[in-house]
Image (cartoon, rainbow over all chains, first blue to last red; front, side, top):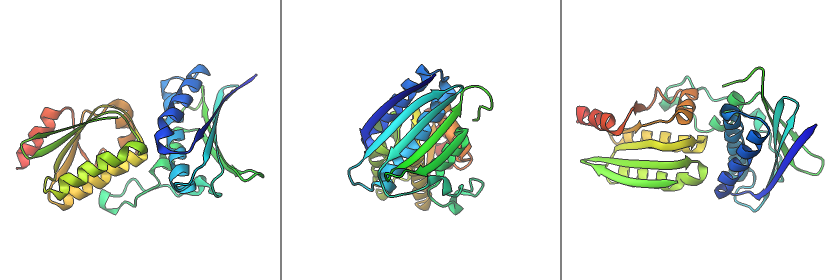
Length: 143
Length: 114
């Protein structure tokens, strides 16, 4: 059986807390522990912030968030209608560099890669960016 | 997020309570800039009440640290909770910042360099 919960919300930074609360509530309802829920909450926050700041760039838009459980995997899907952009191609920041030598940016995607088990992107036929974020509930738990 | 501003001698202290995310960055960044512009580059940020921080908020602290150091000062942190400490460790920024267990220890560290 697949269970899905859906949220559609205006893409703006002051809605981040509502998005996180939604993901936390649904993830826990679907069986996530604190660490697993945190991984998904942080990932959604980072991905949504990227869409709001660099996708819609202050223009009005919507974000759609689905949380679902498929067997032993929690899946959070984030959809937006901003110009096509694949965040999975952002290079990993070099966190071994001293502070003075570090380049700004890229940390959000770094967190997503570190905390999630799978993170993928596709552009839909109807012109939406679709980010799929997966966290296993049992084996192979990261972070 | 709740923001409480205090001073202790020449040290500007900011206590944050709540979730420190991209939406909350602007007032904190503006406060840090005001301190540095006024020559108050000794800054302590108390994160005891913060149980969530994202990369935008983290980057604002990094910018604040750089600005303070450019002015010959320092930005120190104290009272990191576990979900926040994890984020610092994951980015190895726990090595870049001076992090203390509590305000008293952090304030003492400022006194030692003055």
